[in-house]
Length: 225
Image 1 (cartoon, rainbow, N blue to C red):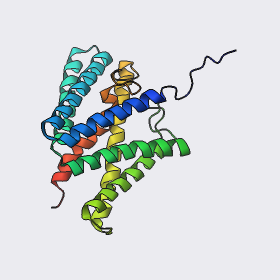
Image 2: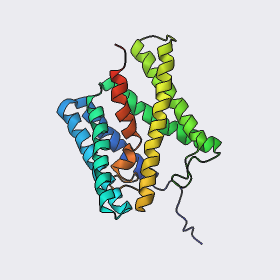
Image 3: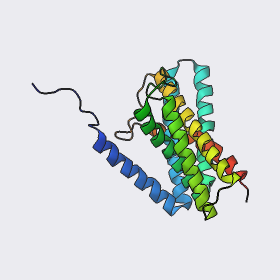
Image 4: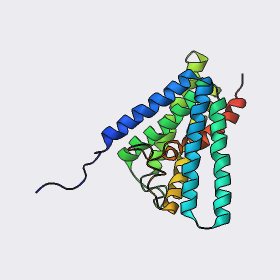
């Protein structure tokens, strides 16, 4: 008798291929800079907004809530796009690295340790152990970027602040993830769209980046010269 159960990670090749394409496009746009990078950010913002508003429209039939929700979505995603377009490249890379570190740290620590869920009705896979693991790795990455920019290994109060900022941004990234998960449950959808094979939609890929990006610009503005 043949096994009809879907194989675990059967879509892994598709996910890897899509990830490579996404990294290549984003990396090329960042390398070209200028109008090319601004155009890339605009495309991402536009796609994310379309998916965001689609989820809102599916989540409720109330016209007033729909209108207010879409206006807030425009402000939320627009602020994140504006921030990403105006951050220095080195800071932008640090922001991206912190968000990736949050996901990686949360994934591996969550799987290895398990334990209590944060909000099982919203995102059943998210655990407190995963959040702490994401915060730790994001803090280490943030501290590493600080040391790289300083140009030497030097322990100082500012290094401690950099680690704390990275850990705090990890919490924001997880909040962004939870928010989209909550909205998708309200809308009755698994993904924000099927635009990216194996990954869902653009909103699914940048949900954690949005609040981090919004926070990054004022944090950079307050950064001592």
